[in-house]
Length: 462
Ligand code: ZN
Ligand code: MN
Image (cartoon, rainbow, N blue to C red):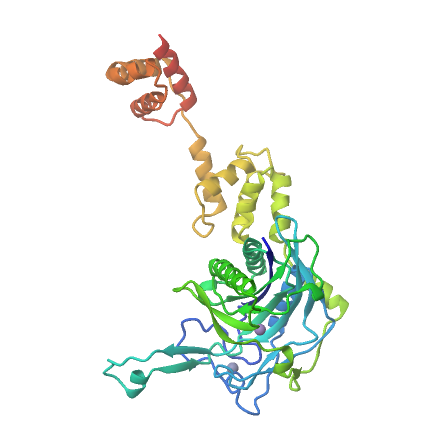
């Protein structure tokens, strides 16, 4: 390809703290009656004083640590000034030059490291709902003209923003990065990162440069002179589609000798297109300045290392440990470590079998447990490790069968199913499963299938 995509990502993740970022209002706003979780602080009334949520800051740092970031010992909040109806203060409290975390990375399965520029803490805005014009409406004047409503329940909900360098050159890597990021915040139990609820929102920025893919990172001076940002996408699939669409659109413009405009675009899922929203602001347009109402935040080295010790074993490490410790295939280990509750369930079930691991009082090895969990799509909220163990044990238990009785029953089955027997003898070997089924039915007890099958085959050869 003549052009190579240059893609960076901004992701916003809502934290599931009890209270909001700078006031005591409940942060769980989903499905609540509009404007019931509000106070002077999150409504942005003049003179109201914000107080930073300590838990939210700790969780932001846990995310940053999990993404291999350096944590700034001295950090502060800043005001990002812009006007929009969902932002009643006229500024968002965010972080500018001293975010909590910087210079991290996520490693993809192909070995590529996506560099993370920064992880910072900010507050969510209110939520606008637009009602389009309805000429036929018999209701109020407002519904005839079309109108917008605003709900401030979301205003001030803690938001962590994770910004990468422009290290992606394809949509598949973007998707993998996003899945890993989602997995990590879920492992940390700091966010459910449910896309449908807007708890994780994605903003890819896309441009194209002349030339082939390269394995090294791009220097800042090699980056294209323009950047198109697609805002607030709420599904991994849509991000992929938006990237594909943008690449195609920008190639056409460049081929016509034009430079794509530096702008913010939206994604229209119905039309499967991005559309222009506004020309993109520069950082200087926001007139960032330190938030005067919140003192700077200092974390000592020992406080940071205490926080590090709270980071659980993350999916990557857990997966390779499952492979080494339990002899699982990479495929099985990957499935079992996708979500922490399932990986915990697996390990608890394994732990029941013996103290040390493989050879066990029940004789169930970790591989069998892994297979059962995966094949039966076990949901750890439906069953306990004890119940699963009992199920596996009973499915393995068979009763002894008298050899003479067995032979008698097999002879009967052969007599009663002459057609199938002929088919088998003429070479259609799959018929054996039918005859085996008939025999098992006759036995009516859970017996050793291999023994029955072997006896059956022997009898058919007579
Ligand atoms: Zn409030
Ligand atoms: Mn942001």
